[in-house]
Image (cartoon, rainbow, N blue to C red; front, side):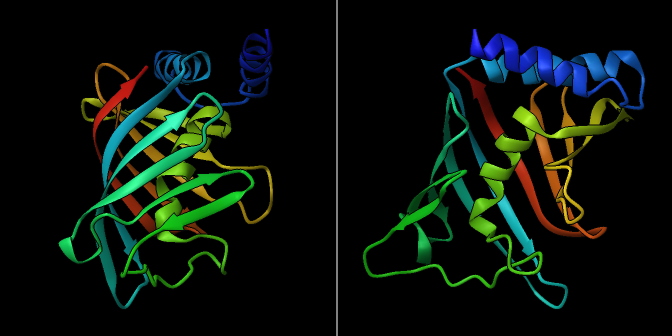
Length: 186
């Protein structure tokens, strides 16, 4: 019942979305599947863009029915095996002899390993600002909150409404990008 109420509430909040009805329907179909599923899994290559330098690493991710994400770094080999869990309440990293030391982004709000959680959270509950076709893919623009300093996500969906890539922007500058593979909703 809670999931049905959440879906109805989200649909009401999205009545101001610009874009063709078909593209919005596809984005909402993905959201509905995520909200009524027991979770999802995917692999991603994350690139953190600091302006003067960038770092890329690969992760495998699992999200549960509440949108909490666990991940394990798979590449590069120097940090492979580091794992963590991220939720609304915060995050936790697990590692043996190696630690991740990424600088924070978005005025200290975001760490690069939070990108998969931001993707899942925003797909599940973000404010859709626009939808449209970008070649053969649907491009969905979503803000992660209604706050003034909201993160903005552009997410590209394939023909089956599966995320292929995403960019996370803060104040109109891309800070993180994800190349997504093997996205599976359970």
